[in-house]
Length: 296
Image 1: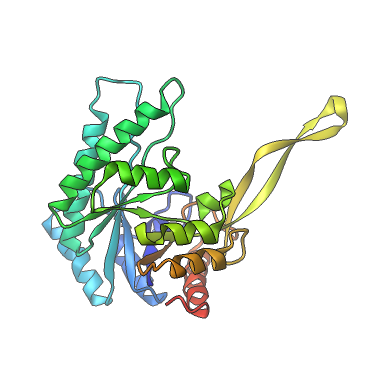
Image 2: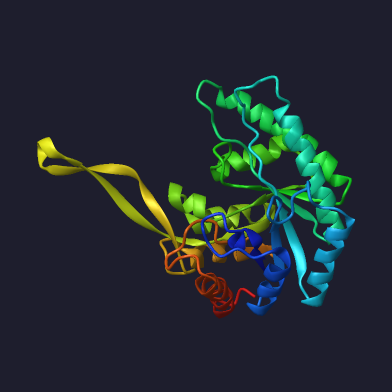
């Protein structure tokens, strides 16, 4: 597998230390990564800011540090919005096509996308249909740039593995793959080995982080007792120290023939805080864990 570090880890969105792209690329090389996954939005690679000069600067930085750009990460939600007159889906199609153009310029052949969240008052089946049609057009436009879309298994529509396979069949495009992560199946109780093996041949990337579950309770004064509250609070910890059985997950991917990109991300507050030193320690720990388990 090819180790890639996701730039969102150093974007500052959760109060952590932020790095610009040049510093992030240098940091990724220093920490032992082969590639980077770049967030397709500010402060990193927004289509609003990308121009030939800025893309050339990124390419030069990658070359200088002997890294490749593996993935451009798109941020999409293909569900309905309140203002029906706004061409919400068309705007996202244009966004993903722009990211595909950027990916091709940087030597990447994958753009990560999401499906949709369910919205109260709207039929899940109707949202599903919009997701399928929109992703079909996104795939067709991305194909013109030699790009594959990786649908990440995070949003509500088609989040279960069986549903995701059904969605892929409905989309029916050769350049539509999945970004298959362990986080969501683990939280929802799917068997990680079985589901990873099942999805391995459909997966272009996997993006990894580990978490602990912190049970929640609400005090009930009249009962002088606590009432369980759901769901649990989830907090990021160093890789291999959380509740996700990554040994089973990666064994399933390997047994299923996966040979794609294994990204690491810090996309939430992490134990120990967001200092440069703590972020670096987490990112480097992932490299060591993957090496010690014979995955690279």
